[in-house]
Amino acid sequence: GNSVTQMEGPVTLSEEAFLTINCTYTATGYPSLFWYVQYPGEGLQLLLKATKADDKGSNKGFEATYRKETTSFHLEKGSVQVSDSAVYFCALFGNEKLTFGTGTRLTIIP
Amino acid sequence: DAGVTQSPTHLIKTRGQQVTLRCSPKSGHDTVSWYQQALGQGPQFIFQYYEEEERQRGNFPDRFSGHQFPNYSSELNVNALLLGDSALYLCASLQNPYNEQFFGPGTRLTVL
Image (cartoon, rainbow over all chains, first blue to last red; front, side, top):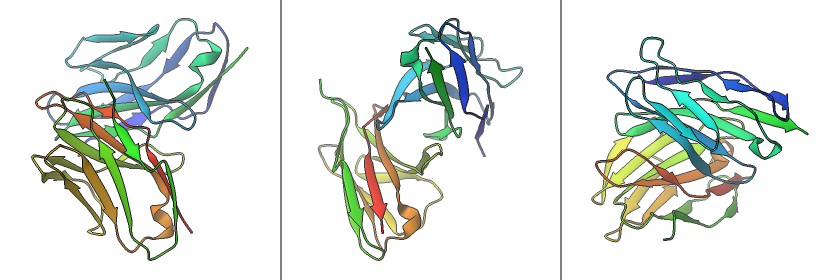
């Protein structure tokens, strides 16, 4: 079946640091890939997506590239802010459902 | 344009009781999926409803059941509650044939 493996957290960075959260997947066919963000006490918000190989999703300074050859979709941001503190989930859409990773808690220190 | 809404926000039940959670999809969306998110974990797919029928189901027991109404809103029912059912229950909607799902704020269920 489909599965998503995420970099384990928690991750703590200083403001303006560079961020990478690793995500790899196992799936049949060509799934769409997503990053969702969850702020404390809230539901999930779509951060970015990519629907085919070599697509780059981007939003709010975050980027991720769909790499079919390495089955990866790593999340990056060049300069993080305190407001980026949240839990980040990598997910794939296949067989009519989303399969999520376990999430990575990110804390940014001023 | 209202997004996905869920009710109630919080719920406390005791073991053995039954619970019903409700979800209204985003305007224009015809498909609703339910997910269970245990503390510190990623959401797990429960089932999906389309055209008032269960179209896909995850690895959850029959105690979990659902319904979709003609206006596309949906209910999740859980019978014979167990302590392990304590979680955040998320509803997501989408419009076929697209796969981008929009999530509601969730219902926090606590089973004592």
